[in-house]
Image 1 (cartoon, rainbow, N blue to C red):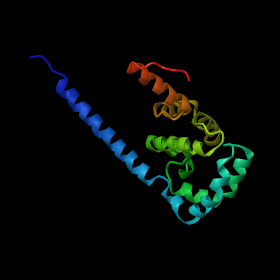
Image 2 (cartoon, rainbow, N blue to C red; image 1 turned 135 degrees about the vertical axis):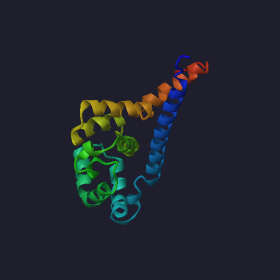
Image 3 (cartoon, rainbow, N blue to C red; image 1 turned 30 degrees about the vertical axis):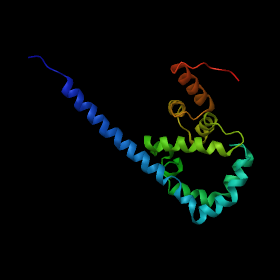
Image 4 (cartoon, one colour; image 1 turned 90 degrees about the horizontal axis):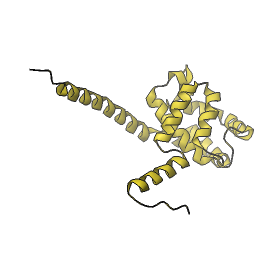
Length: 173
């Protein structure tokens, strides 16, 4: 009788599923706990004062950097309690896990909605200089942003692909 690899392959698939489900549970837990520290104490007081000022600012501008500097005590507290920030780790971004990085890029993407010039790809570029990560990690973050449809062009491309798949005509209005 010859060897049948299917039982081993099914076992491998099951083992991968177990590990992926652990990742899903981790991400679900992180999504439920995300930025809860901003809802009380020094963080709440500071964000109540500064969030409206940040809305119209250009991310990375001198005005933005000054505002962030003025928020330093609250931001220090925030970074010390939230592992999706590179500042949480003594080694910076190199101390982060892939799970932290996923939450981080989701956080950055959501944060772009607060700025006049907000765009995740620009944030990834600016933050490469800020946190000193490699071109390889920058590309992984860009790929992840596209996979999760974080840019306007991704959403548009998805809609076009879906229309084509469903046999709908595309209209350029």
